[in-house]
Length: 395
Ligand code: 3PG
Ligand code: MG
Image (tube, rainbow, N blue to C red; front, side, top):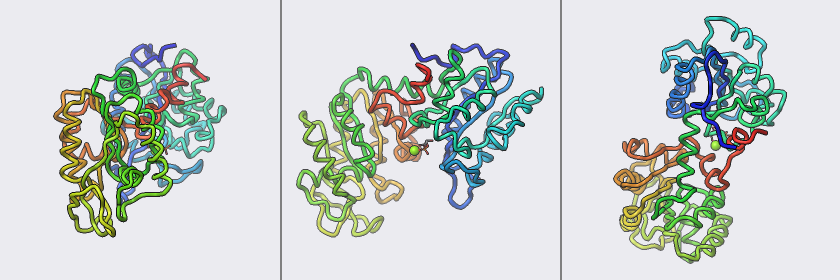
């Protein structure tokens, strides 16, 4: 059965229940200030589509943070409701509880158009994929739309078991559609050469994705903190760089599987005596004792951009160094700039690399920027996600 998307739905005169991923980051000092609104901004076309195509009532739902099944004002969706109302120029009513009996009444009032349910994770049933909880939510809609790609790797009630109540009436939203189609492009016969760039801190988080990618890529560039366990596994000195024994072992396993020598590692570094301290160039692959690598060096930037310039498909997940600190941002920003100049299909995913791309000013030069870090990695690894599978086949 093919996945049905919202453009195949008849929304006219219908009440729509729609799941989004409004799990956005907030300012540490001002808990009501959203620091990156991308996930909400990218949901707007789907909400507008529903409004423009005759939906009478729209009930929006999302999780925020990890309140672990309990009501906690710190994780309220109130700032999201305010932001949405401004963006849409429509009233957005925040319902105090996702399962309050008042919500159904609210939806019978003629003036009600858009309701946002309070954080789904205030209810224990969300994360336990509870059918009763999903059943209560299901009463708010005649049609169900899932546009929460960022949460599609979670087997939670509002993305998974809820599909039971909407057989033949469940659709993917416009964002979910673009995310899936972009990832499918990478998974199914990517234009060659296909290069993947993997960075970030922990090998264990990405090992399955790396193993899956090794099969289909022409080159696999590894940078950032991810590179040190690989260098160590190859017998290089890494000084005091971030490098757990577990990660070294995993790196060894991956290197052994790399029969085609597709993995490309840094050949020089920007190092420091302490985390975020004064930067020094280390022109060798070996890092001296007492120093830690915090960015890739200039020869590595040349090496990596040479490989990338030939590419027709590029997948990027994870930064090349401590890019939040301008002294160690060069590697990550160079990759962003190189990718921006390519005539290729370029996809970036993962919270850190996405914020690096946004910071670089080249965001509009990428073919697709994924709103799901964990979700995009899991989709690459398995070719499916619980939330997408449930939309496709039901539960
Ligand atoms: C995310 O930001 O990764 C998604 O919104 C899912 O949230 P979670 O990791 O808390 O399940
Ligand atoms: Mg996550």
